[in-house]
Each structure stands twice: as C-alpha cells, then as structure tokens.
Amino acid sequence: MTTSAPLPARPRIIRTMKLPPMVEARIAECFEAPPPPSQPLQTAEALRLAEEFGASAILLTHATPLFADMIPQIPSCVKLIATVSVGLDHLDVAALAERGIMVSNTPDVLTDCNADLTMMLILGASRRVTEMSRVIREGWGRSLAMDELLGLRVTGKTLGIVGMGRIGQGVARRARGFDMNVLYNNRRRLPEDLEYGASWVRDLNDMLPRCDILSLHLPGGDSTDSMMNAETFSQLPKGAIFINAARGRLVDETALIAALKSGQLAAAGLDVFRNEPHPNPELLSLPNVFATPHIGSCTVETRSDMGMLALDNVEAFIAGRPLPTGVTA
Ligand code: DGY
Image (tube, rainbow, N blue to C red; front, side, top):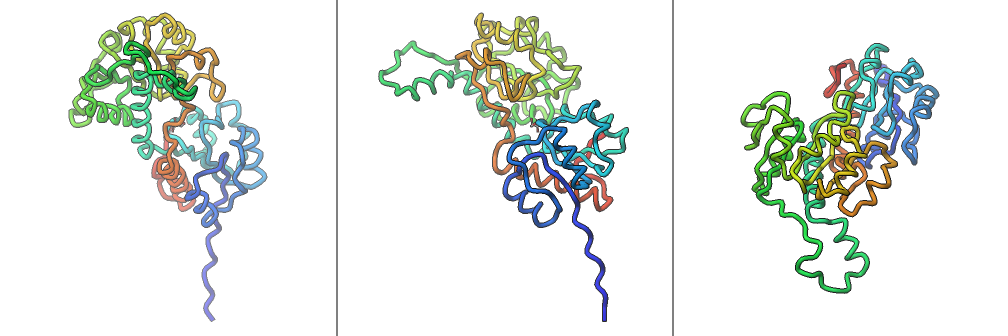
C-alpha cells in the first residue's frame, strides 16, 4: 500500500474587503479564509480577525491603514501584508520590516486604468461635465445658448505631468492622442523611449507657468504633503485646469478651493481627497469640480488583476519564493 504525501495546508489569510468574483473564487479554492466582510474592515477589527483566525497574511487596501501606532498590535501569526494597491502611504513599511513582516503591493496592473481615469478627469473638468450633467439630469428643457457653459478645448493644450512614473508615462502616451504638448517634472530625466514625446522640466517652478493643464502623479507622504498650495497654484496661468488622481495629501485643499473660486483655476478634476471617504463638502459643492470617489483602479479587469497579484504574493511567501512584487523599506 502506498501512502500519499500529506496535502500542503492551505494558506490562512484574511481580507479586509470583498474582492472581485474571480479573486474570491481563487480564495475559496486555494486558501483558508473567513467570509469576506460586507464593509471594509477598520484596522483594529482586521487585526482582531487575523489573530482569531491565525492568519499568516492580510490582504488590505488604503482604507485599512497600518501606521506605527498599530504595528505592535499585529498578531505574531501575521508575516505578510499584501496591499491591494500600488500606493503604500497607508503602511509604515519600515516599521513593518522591523517587526519582520513582509509587504507586497500591486504595481503595473493598474497603470492603464489610472491613466485612463486621468484622461477622463482632464476631459470632465475641461468640458464642465459636472454642470452639463446637472442640466441633462434636470430635464434639459431648452437649447443652451452659443455662449453658455462653454468649456475649454483639450486638443493642442500644454499638459504638465508632475511625477513621471508608470502612471505619468501612461498619461503622456494618451495625451499624444489629443495632440497635446506634454511637459513633465521628475527628479531625473527619463530615457527618451519612456518620455513618449514629453519634455523634461527640471524645476517645477519653471514648468507651472507653462501648463494649461497640470496633473499630479506622485506618491503621497510627508515629503510631498501640500506641494500644491497657494504659492504653487498662483504660478499656473490664470484659468488653468488642475487634475489629481494621485493622493489627496499632495494638495492644500483650502488653497485649491480659493483658486477655484477666484478663477485662478478654471476647474479641477479630482479622484482623491485629503479626508477620504469624507471629502471637504465645500470642495465638492463647487460647480467647477469634476470629482470621482478614488476609482482609478475600479474596473473589473484591474481590480481582478490586483487581487490575483496579491494572492500570487501570498502563495510565493508561503512557498518560500521571492515575492513577485515585494516592497522594501
Ligand atoms: C492605489 O492602488 O494606490 C490606488 O490609489 C488605490 O489606493
């Protein structure tokens, strides 16, 4: 009689939010996990659940931050934090590393959808979609006059990209389709094949006055906090369009509101806010704000790819292989 080798135990994980069907199906098939929560878990709840369940990995998002004050409360069974995001500003990666906890994220798979969303924000803000949408939802009822609710042409304008990483490059590539003149500000000049026809401007102060449209693509964090403020908004040409699909912390929202009210900015397209998910109501009440609720990666394909990549990282970790998209402090 042959004895078969014992089946390897299925990795024990928890997730702080329900994931797309394809990802949930893989969890059901290949992992041990409690049922998905109906609402994203708060950090304390997630850590309690991880302890009760004996999870070796936690899948989470920016809605469940793990800063230094919470790290001592992570149960000792947890060895991997697999964030289902590219951004890491909700995690203290250095403090996690000190506790011997590995971190992975989900880069690349969301680049295209974030760049697509940026184009939508550019178009939505420039073409006054907030106001137009109100007109149509209220029944329209009369023809608009030839000089009424005029937007701004996007084609041929100068777009300034701050932060020319993967998503910034994706925006530059798309902007070529709109015949835009693209400038970018980045610490270093990129090799020409990654510039997609955009021109590097070393100093942000030199770039701002040249931008009809400015779009941020920087990570959040202390070093970039409020980099858009009264001073930097005032350097843009009057009537510029401001776009942020990166992180709310990059912007001093009081200064943004003032610039939108004074006409210094014609409009803003915003997917991210300082106080998510409770953004400043005054900002949202402005007719020249075209806003979405942090949905850069919110498509069937991308959210599925992100969840799958997070699970790939868990499986690699359990098998003792290098993490496909591990993060170091
Ligand atoms: C990301 O992946 O960082 C998105 O902004 C969601 O947090």
